[in-house]
Length: 246
Image (tube, rainbow, N blue to C red; front, top):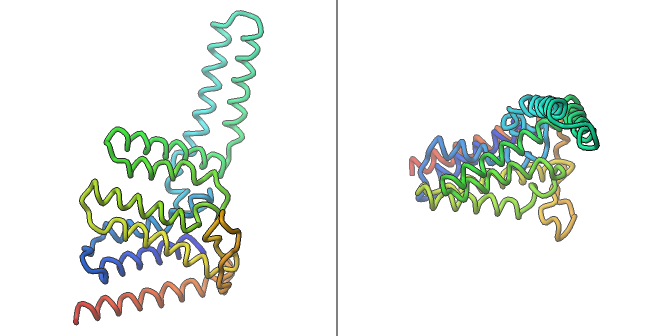
């Protein structure tokens, strides 16, 4: 399913949680969290909507490699005496330069996400927020897994919900786990409606659970996605309004 549809379904799920679950405050922040969580499973795909947003530093990653190459070359040229170490220095500089020049699209974005995730891990350690470090670790590792594998399992949904629980405890914001877990689960449920399906219980089993209604990217699939989002939205809106009038 397309990223825009996942985002819409996640936001609607956030509205449902905030408007229907007793004891959970209806808030734009909670709805936004559900939307973000609905995009999180696709961090395993370098071309996904969230990967592109979080991989904003991809061009800087490429230039970082080029600058490292230039620095190694200058250091080797001026400070290393002739010999094996000098040849090794120039070889390393050439390797870094070629890597930087060769990085395009997905590869650069993966490294950008790695650095973004590791920076978030450090921020979490500095502030004492374990949940923030766990989010950073997820962002750093997910791009290096196969698409619709580990991030598209019930275990990943449970982990994401637990991260929300830890955030709830440290921030005192009741409902974080529900917004986070509900948004994440909405992604897996939506992808279950596609022809590719989801391996919910990997690695215990590679069985792909699916209700093959949608062929992602096809005209009919796009139309069906819009219809599902519209129907889901109207259903939640009706339930929320009904609760308010009850």
